[in-house]
Image (tube, rainbow, N blue to C red; front, side, top):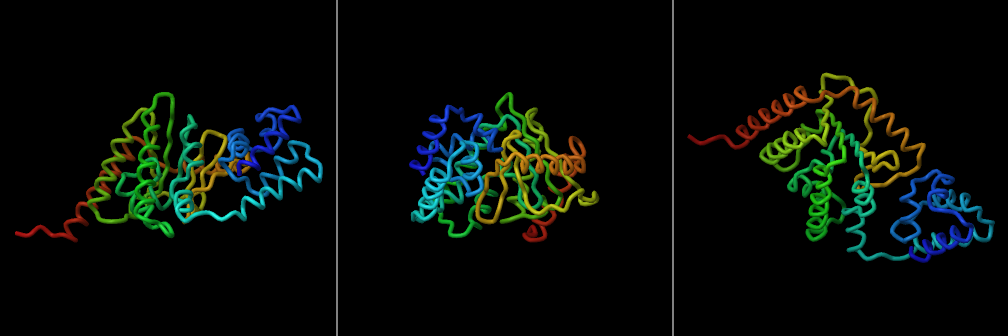
Length: 278
């Protein structure tokens, strides 16, 4: 990874181009160029092709960097590194922390930035090949990432379906604590929380959750990990989709009333599962 990054950086400097110019020509975010050049991110074949075109590489040089990418992809990795990569998402963490505006839509699982430690533990434990050590590190990293919610000058907007609130791991008690956290976060001046009630038709059929980091990148969540996409056209499409979901949501007092109603239902569910003995 470092050899590939160093070679691309050398070619850029040799061409007299800045990272910003290469990013613009390639149609990717500038952080992507920086992460690739410093060996912190492996580009896809498509992104590498765009970077090669932006750098004006001839056929032999383009073949050289493609061979370096192939070597990176063929290199063995340790199980521990794989666990950390799939659970912790260091590149994703950098994208979220550097963003001044974070917008997240979720249709099944609560947004990562709003999850309690216990809720997050259940999320990570469901990942393939998760170990207790890797899960512990992932939970700690996720909770640490949430500190950006409280930083002045940042804005976080969350839109989730009512189905998210009704899809719960663990126990009703876990969800009661989680809903209480949502109420606390919703009151922050840096946060806007919207919920699409089940009575409202969704404008687009949701297929998965995603998080926009400024207008530069989008985090797409899968069963195995979080994937960072920085193709500007694709990011713009996700922005359009987020706006449509946001228009269908309720906010403020309506959202709080819905959360309180959910808490009441989970309290009733808890009593039905664990009835109070007389």
